[in-house]
Amino acid sequence: MELHSGDNRSIPGMAVFSRYGTAGMEAFSRVGIMGAGATGMGIADSLLESDIPVTIYELDREPLDLATAAMRSTYQNAVCDGELTVAQRDRRVALLAATINLHHLKDCDVIVDALHTSAAVRDGVLRRLNELAKPGAVLIACVSDADEDADAEVNRIAALMRFPENVLGMRRTNGAGSEQWELVPAKATSERALATATRVVQNFGMSPVVELPPVLL
Image (tube, rainbow, N blue to C red; front, top):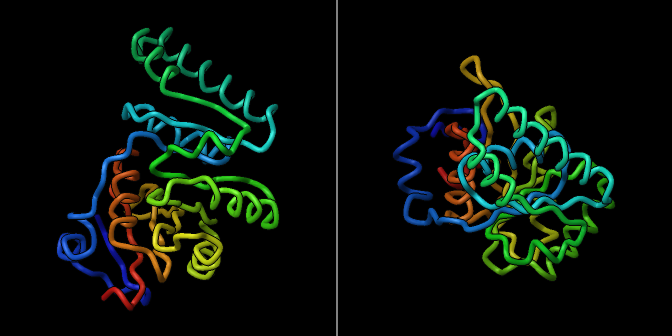
């Protein structure tokens, strides 16, 4: 895992990770993903490949049905091409749940916010999530890779939540010639939440970059 401070200085990854997360790293039995767009479904596919149950939530039924149908079609094509066995296809399909009822995320250990909607609608969903998510659930908010104010947005989202220590951000970056996921902790993000999010990204088959605010140095 590669880590950077808020002023872009590099920090030895293993040393910082041992300080801020190894002991707190937790397993998760189900991941909820809010948003059935390209980002949300891409994350879902990576987790399903790692044998992790996923619940996809979307605001409306039509885009949800289209996205899940496309994923099942992709798996069937992979079987036809010899890239997946029938058993692997069936296992991934069985691990995938889809819903327009936010209440179905209540048992998720991690919830990824990848909704593509207005800020007002997104904030409304997050406030509802406050009422039903389990107290220890980690919320990972996807922020734009072009957003230079990612820290401010993640802190704004954390302030909406009942347990801000369980909130952090995540965005795509390009480093060393390949795509990476960067974790963006909020001011209140706990060591446990950072460690759990790191484990989520590791299930994408990559090691995350973590931008640590100066207070953690």
